[in-house]
Image (cartoon, rainbow, N blue to C red; front, side, top):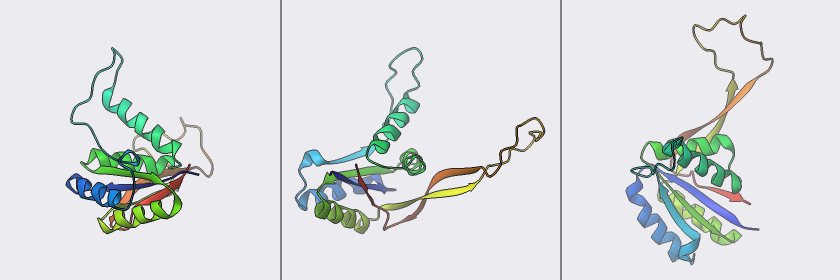
Amino acid sequence: MPKTAVGLFENAGLVDNVVRDIEALGFPRKEVRAMEEPASFDVTGVMSFPRLDFEVALVRELARIGVTKPQAQAYVAGLRRGGALVFATGLDEKVGAAVDMMNRHGAVAVEEIVGGEPSLPGVAGEIMTPVQNSTVQAGRVRQSGGGAACFVW
């Protein structure tokens, strides 16, 4: 079963070194890729929202490899802030080594946050239908280092 290591890096300038070091572990070039938010987005039609289209496609791709929606949102937020993602797909031991390599290069930790439904100031509560025991899941970037993750798909 394929596994993919994913690492978010705050400094996109580090990514070339990360990719080179992962390839040195024996990963074929086609199994290692890096991604940054594009500098410009192509408009594909009248109703095109290029940045949103990019982000939706990325979240869909991340979900395909087993990333939760809150984690995917945190990865997208990291790209918006000028970060970069590195992906390495392979067998168990190789992917584990790729995770270690990413962490040595300072991959940013991403976590899921579960909390209560946010309250909106100025919105009258009686107009809205009350929701019992509602929780919201969101992703956030936690800290630098030790943050690469392995996903099985």
